[in-house]
Image (cartoon, rainbow, N blue to C red; front, side, top):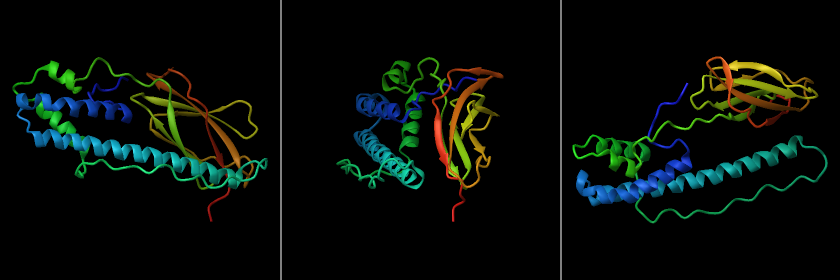
Length: 236
């Protein structure tokens, strides 16, 4: 199943680059589409604040991931080295030197793009230049990715990025198992592996591998191995 064609890039980084070019080029179309300088400036401010928010959040997410790994190693890691100290805080960020903006930056961008595309003066060449016309078929990820979370000591929740595919095949190898076990084929994006640990109360390494399925047939590449450790103990 192919994705619906859209003009906005799905990748956050690509979308920000697209938004950057749109706001830089927009003043050149102001007269043709009846846009005032305050309108085009306001959208540029939207971009600057959204870029700032995404950069900050990306750094915070990386810092959280580093701290979670530090905690997991300290809690259940192999006794081969002294426990590391808590990872330090990353760099501070300077906010854009423009007025704060209202929430809803992307909907405002979409609304302005829709206004331009329905304007009597609209030409497709303008839309292509501004980046608000879809170009060909969208690329579709053929190698699955997912985020994993451990709950209740043994339950692993997989949140799969399906990217328009019908289903996902999931295999898992855990503990001393040599060959991965096929858990099933799942149409939903959130998958729960609620099997108890092989040895009650002991940590267990689980390695998950995924593959997309369309029209009842496997497609694309196998995912990278996604590894988690289930502690086996319920939270106090």
